[in-house]
Length: 434
Image (tube, rainbow, N blue to C red):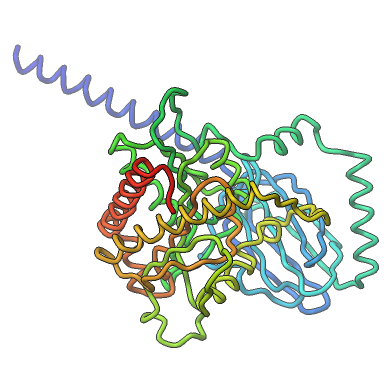
């Protein structure tokens, strides 16, 4: 009888086990079937005409348009998972100097092709897959003159005015470019703990630096920021918000808007650096650095180099995303109150940067022990102390290994938490830093 009971129990248990496993396998197949995957991309052609082909798991609708200054071709499509090798698109061919891809907004992916000269989109379509063959997106570009390019650009604008997109969708994109529920913790309105804004750099279209072993900056800084957020929350001393919690492209000005909307008390941008292949002894150029926004005063050669870094495409989200940002000719009105607020914010930013460097240098390798300043757009919140921390150089195999190490991340994250603690005590004690 006892044997029979054991047998019955085992039979029921294993049946339930296999039913559960089959259910989850079936569910995963359904989810996978809904996911659109881009598995490969290829450029074919020369300096007169070129074809851009992408393999897709299913046929999707696309929208293609061109932009000038510089010349770009933008392709919008539904949300796609790009399973491309790291660094694909950085080297162009023929008419194309480079291309980039990624999640542009919720439910929307974007591909931006950088053209060396004016081009026309001669063909643009997606062909359904046949048998074992995947679906393919086919874009054919041909060389043209600047005048013809401008004419076709005007036609596109007029067409969009006559046939606008769904106004509800357009309104949602303009007013809510960021999924706040995704990126923000929920806190009680009466919670007076300091609000810390963590800003993982890059994301989506913008991969950032690429390590010697293919590590993407956008991924490693996101993982680091999540770990830092969790460690800060454990202290129960702070409220914490991430500007992005997944691989989504967020404009620089929107990152600052998040910080101000959440009434941040401290803004910390997390990045990883890199040096060009041409530079010798790349492994010897390594370690962390801390930056604040440029202000008038003594400037070093390294600060000037940092400005060059801040002025390149990584600091120009309108070029990265393929979106034209209107630039008003009217200069910003700066009265004495704004200058005073900005001056106080810069003083507090520098104070935190000094605390951070002093604590960080004791635990992890630093590239430089001085506070650097540069014109990073993400640091331009006038009323929130803001710093940008470069964790290390992905071009160094040593730093790349550290950035992928959970143990190293925890060790360096603790220095940031200690710096925040010390900074907040100083602010509470003196009211302001002078």
